[in-house]
Length: 240
Image (cartoon, rainbow, N blue to C red):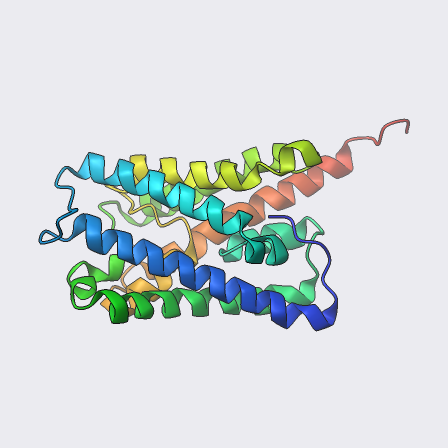
């Protein structure tokens, strides 16, 4: 997840990698919902609890796999504006890369959902392009989208400092997102990623409450990164 400092000439190329990764993420996620949730699908899972557990496990593997992929290793495999801001605030990504990365991720969200419609047909429309919904009110949804992301990044912060543990960050993120889907999808929708919701919501016309799905999962890692910065500055360096 932690990308090396990029030369200015490399920013566009790495942003293109983020576009490809996020497009792939959304294409597969929308495809999974099409095949696992559409009533006419031979793979449909009728029990919501089982459906969300299976979907969570598959998405966990997908996220970790994309982060470990060659493109993921090159760009950092963010696929999430909040991840990009977290890495930037941690000093591992230059500010010049933030906007290109975020634009690429959001564009990939739209492209992935649209590509899924082209490949999988009208059934994608019938499952709402996999856009998530919520049974919670505004504050409840905001917290349900923000707190799991914050917890994931707190755990990630313990893995990042040492190379021997940093290599497991993709697994931590994948498992964290997977568990969130398994336990919260029935109430909040468990998007926990603006890029996960934007494209599907636009295609499906589900814009009510969209701002929460776009803001809460980004605000959470930003707050964690800022708190970590304060804590690190307040802790004396060894030998000081």
